[in-house]
Amino acid sequence: MKSPSRMLLAAWTSLGPRFLPFADVATPDLPLSRLLRLSLFQASVGMALVLLVGTLNRVMIVELGVPASLVAIMVALPVVYAPLRAFIGYRSDTHHSALGWRRVPFIWMGTMLQFGGLAIMPFALLVLGGGGNASAWPAWIGQAGAGIAFLLVGAGIHTVQTAGLALATDLTAEESKPKVVGLMYVMLLAGTMVSAVIFGQLLADFSPGRLVQVIQGAALTTMVLNVIALWKQETRRPPRGAAPRQHPGFREAWSQFIEHGHAVRRLVAIGLGTMAFGMQDVLLEPYGGQVLGMSVGSTTSLTATLAFGGLLGFGWASGVLSRGADPFRMAAGGALVGIPAFLAVLAAAPLGSVTLFAAGVLGIGLGGGIFSHGTLTASMNSAPKEQAGLALGAWGAVQATAAGVAVALGGVLRDVISALAGQGFFGPALARPATGYAFVYGVELLLLVATVVAMSALIGSARHETDPRFNQEFKRSSP
Image 1: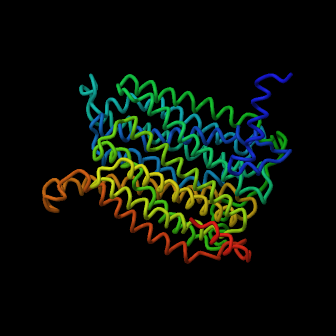
Image 2: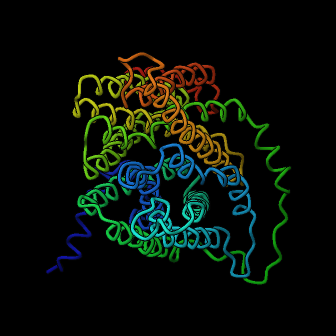
Image 3: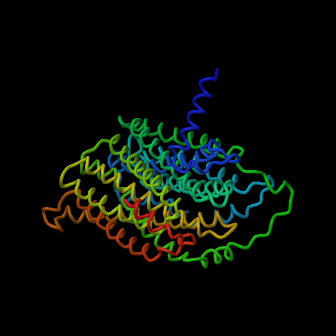
């Protein structure tokens, strides 16, 4: 008789290929269980992102009374490291350690940065908000402490994600690399959803002490998940003591990459779309709290809704792209899906409809997932040989930089427009909190239109997009 644990493992393994997106990438040499274990580093990244752009920005703005512009700048601070993702990817491509590892040292270093930032973050936030005896401290102490915490977490996220995704591509065959990277991002979204639900439950009855417990628990969980993820994943080669292989310098490698295909045009289009979907990140939960009167737990669940929409988008895009669809057309389709979603969010305020707001959030996640998968697949398909880390780093650098700029810009615009509206600059009808948010969402709609135009110019430029089945497949599957 089989033990219950073996029966459960067998059931999970049989369900995986049927219901998990990208599960068909598993092979006898690289079983699904190993891939899922490796993907745990994405779960830790998703958890950190929920804290940074979801739970904490709501808590700082509403419960701690920190100005939205300052919160937006804090959340956007990790963007300082975003341009370095290309260099991190290049270094993990060419790194030679005494133990024969390339990716593992970077994943471990990033894990320690994440842990350190999360460990000091709750106390810095309490000082920043002036709670309890924290008001006795100068204001700059809280600002500096929170800034350092956000910088450390951001540096850790960028390092872990870049090196981890490169390691995932190292472990798979050439034709399966886009699929395995897609699987990693599905697990990122799954980690985001689970973390959002858990944080929402734990912070339903908010208190400063509970905030400290939740964030420090996240720090410990990050360490545990990442150690499990990287355990015995990377082969130690070349053998210890072997002469390092000669590689071109970063400038030469970058020149080769940027001259390949339509790299500059592609990266600009990715930046536009990322900004279009990213400006609302820091405003989503405050919008629900201030305009629609939702609780902390309810607004945190919106992050899970956003991630679930992204998961649906990734799953649908995977099926279409695996049949030879044009990834740039897919990305343009994601931007088109985002337009009615943002219109629904805009309409939720005058109608006072939480249901319409949640539906719009789900649509934003769906469009963002389709867009991200399209651009990610295009980037992987265009990556030169031996430059998987550099290609993923460049994609991540542009996406993270654009997202950080968008978050900061969204918070500043919301504060400026809300202040002008409160002074009656736009008339008495618009002298309400929703005006600042509505302006930001309107800017995002314009950026989505620009993204559709930019992506349309790239359709047909990917290497595999000459497949004659493409148009029929996409048209049959188009949302």
